[in-house]
Length: 107
Image 1 (cartoon, one colour):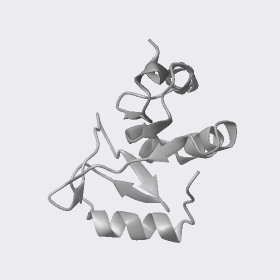
Image 2: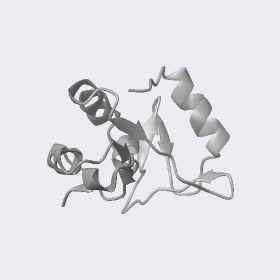
Image 3: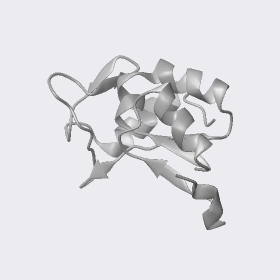
Protein backbone atom coordinates (compact mmCIF):
# COMPACT_ATOMS: atom_id res chain seq x y z
CA UNK A 1 0.00 0.00 0.00
CA UNK A 2 2.00 3.00 -1.22
CA UNK A 3 0.02 6.18 -1.64
CA UNK A 4 3.11 8.32 -2.38
CA UNK A 5 3.42 6.87 -5.89
CA UNK A 6 0.23 8.71 -6.89
CA UNK A 7 2.19 11.99 -6.85
CA UNK A 8 -0.49 14.02 -5.08
CA UNK A 9 -1.16 14.91 -1.45
CA UNK A 10 -3.86 12.80 0.12
CA UNK A 11 -5.85 13.24 3.34
CA UNK A 12 -7.56 10.19 4.75
CA UNK A 13 -10.24 9.78 7.40
CA UNK A 14 -12.80 7.21 8.58
CA UNK A 15 -12.18 4.46 11.06
CA UNK A 16 -8.89 5.88 12.34
CA UNK A 17 -9.01 5.15 16.07
CA UNK A 18 -5.48 4.28 17.24
CA UNK A 19 -1.85 5.38 17.03
CA UNK A 20 -1.20 2.26 14.98
CA UNK A 21 -3.88 3.32 12.44
CA UNK A 22 -2.28 6.75 12.10
CA UNK A 23 1.21 5.30 11.79
CA UNK A 24 0.13 2.79 9.15
CA UNK A 25 -1.49 5.39 6.90
CA UNK A 26 1.28 7.97 7.27
CA UNK A 27 3.88 5.27 6.50
CA UNK A 28 1.86 4.39 3.40
CA UNK A 29 2.28 7.96 2.14
CA UNK A 30 -0.92 9.68 3.27
CA UNK A 31 -0.15 13.38 3.77
CA UNK A 32 -2.59 14.03 6.64
CA UNK A 33 -4.88 11.86 8.73
CA UNK A 34 -8.36 13.13 9.63
CA UNK A 35 -9.72 12.24 13.07
CA UNK A 36 -13.48 12.49 13.56
CA UNK A 37 -15.41 10.54 16.17
CA UNK A 38 -12.25 9.65 18.11
CA UNK A 39 -11.43 13.37 18.33
CA UNK A 40 -14.86 14.10 19.80
CA UNK A 41 -14.64 11.18 22.23
CA UNK A 42 -11.05 11.80 23.32
CA UNK A 43 -9.60 15.29 22.75
CA UNK A 44 -6.45 14.28 24.65
CA UNK A 45 -5.76 11.69 21.93
CA UNK A 46 -5.73 14.51 19.37
CA UNK A 47 -3.30 16.51 21.48
CA UNK A 48 -0.90 13.56 21.74
CA UNK A 49 -1.23 12.79 18.01
CA UNK A 50 -0.53 16.43 17.10
CA UNK A 51 2.65 16.37 19.17
CA UNK A 52 3.77 13.07 17.70
CA UNK A 53 2.96 13.93 14.07
CA UNK A 54 3.04 17.75 13.81
CA UNK A 55 1.23 19.12 10.76
CA UNK A 56 -0.12 15.69 9.83
CA UNK A 57 -3.32 15.52 11.93
CA UNK A 58 -6.64 17.17 11.06
CA UNK A 59 -9.87 17.11 13.05
CA UNK A 60 -13.04 16.76 11.01
CA UNK A 61 -16.52 17.47 12.34
CA UNK A 62 -19.20 15.93 10.18
CA UNK A 63 -22.50 17.72 10.01
CA UNK A 64 -25.89 16.96 8.62
CA UNK A 65 -28.48 19.72 8.23
CA UNK A 66 -26.38 22.03 10.41
CA UNK A 67 -26.10 19.52 13.29
CA UNK A 68 -23.09 17.53 14.48
CA UNK A 69 -23.33 14.03 13.05
CA UNK A 70 -21.08 11.49 14.74
CA UNK A 71 -21.46 7.81 15.41
CA UNK A 72 -22.47 6.88 18.91
CA UNK A 73 -23.23 3.54 20.44
CA UNK A 74 -24.76 4.59 23.73
CA UNK A 75 -24.36 7.83 25.53
CA UNK A 76 -22.66 10.97 24.30
CA UNK A 77 -20.22 10.89 21.42
CA UNK A 78 -17.91 13.13 23.35
CA UNK A 79 -17.68 16.47 25.06
CA UNK A 80 -16.40 19.93 24.35
CA UNK A 81 -15.89 21.95 27.52
CA UNK A 82 -17.97 19.40 29.41
CA UNK A 83 -21.00 19.64 27.11
CA UNK A 84 -22.15 16.33 25.69
CA UNK A 85 -22.30 16.00 21.90
CA UNK A 86 -25.06 13.66 20.79
CA UNK A 87 -25.67 12.67 17.21
CA UNK A 88 -27.69 15.49 15.69
CA UNK A 89 -28.48 17.15 19.00
CA UNK A 90 -26.00 20.01 18.87
CA UNK A 91 -25.81 22.74 16.29
CA UNK A 92 -22.60 22.77 14.25
CA UNK A 93 -22.09 26.50 14.81
CA UNK A 94 -22.41 25.96 18.55
CA UNK A 95 -19.97 23.02 18.46
CA UNK A 96 -17.41 25.14 16.62
CA UNK A 97 -17.85 28.00 19.10
CA UNK A 98 -17.43 25.60 22.03
CA UNK A 99 -14.28 24.18 20.45
CA UNK A 100 -12.88 27.68 19.97
CA UNK A 101 -13.74 28.55 23.56
CA UNK A 102 -11.84 25.47 24.67
CA UNK A 103 -8.84 26.89 22.82
CA UNK A 104 -8.78 24.02 20.36
CA UNK A 105 -5.74 24.36 18.15
CA UNK A 106 -4.74 23.28 14.70
CA UNK A 107 -1.88 20.87 14.51
